[in-house]
Image (tube, rainbow, N blue to C red; front, side, top):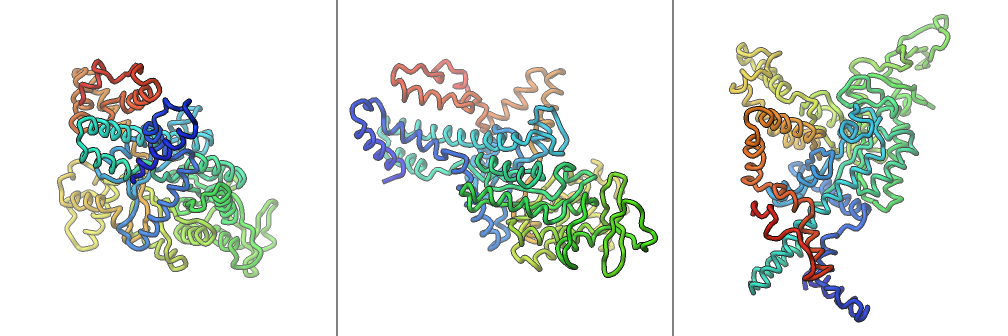
Length: 531
């Protein structure tokens, strides 16, 4: 018997036990509602999606071509549309996730208005967005399954038994829109206790994967801006432990922690690490400080002094009170950060870089894997990078190193459209196309994400619409470039009433009131123009 029929049978038996007062309850309608609402709580979602991530991580370890991908989103509708599009075009959600960006919450969801990525937004906005995303994804399930139920009823009414059986099989083997969300907790919004409390809220909303960065919480900066300040490893590890305790307390034993290091671009620290003996973790952190050797006579009031191998070292301190790391120590600090995090509870790594360069990432991952052979990355394919210029310059440098003639190009101006049809541009575009595949094969990248895609696509599409609509094109700017394309490309939201749940509501009206139901989807509904 099918899953669908099992549900109907179980509910019919339940109705019998309730007696005649439940005679109006149709077991098949209840079965439909249950199947449309498979995930009852955020913890159900977190456990389900954590298992997916663990399976995907194991498959990547066996085959690096099996990497995963996601796109960032700032609204439930945006996340829903991504998954609907994935299912429409790729027929499966396998290895496709969603990314929840703290940057986008700060810029687009804060009650303070648009904010920079500095953890100044309301931290409750993070679990609220996770819950919103899964609300929309659950509705996507309900909407799609509702369409299958309607098709099943139509096939039965027409005595098309084979078609009805095929539709029922689709229902029994239905693939949900619910996928893992990698959720950005920034630097934890406070101390380890604050991190734990917020992590719990995020997990209860459905998060199976939490990304935590090693910046100072109250000095947090966007990973692609200057002025980043890191914390000693013990502080960061306490927050990793806090997140793990949150997962375990809530019964999400497979929960995934992504440890992000900003050390490559962070030249500052707020505090000297505690060191109890030479070579311990605190001593290693301090060894990267930019220091000058001094004599006892050179000591000044307020100096902070390190004793290393019998030498007195004074770390260089800025007017802000921050201490500075040695120039060129970023990669070594990254490697130490990553090894330490993986050996102390993290599952995946995130290395924030200043450019998308497979060779640079690989050089760090190779060193990390000397200590942790199965180290894997989540990598930010960031819109903060000028991808066109970066890759054209990489190709220019490669051609120059090979002794090729590059005199036709100005390296500083390679972004120019005049180079778009050149051989150099063609090679660069191919490298961009294969960047994710190459990075996963060569540099241990398990998951590729774009943090802010819909921020930029919304701006671009709105600009194009406004440019035409408020000028000569008028309504044609919308019809030609939006609605006509929705119809021809089969974009589901062209039927926006359906997407908002109108048909689901009609189904429920029929379940609750039978023939007396007043439905919205009748012959006068203008959405019928899009059949």
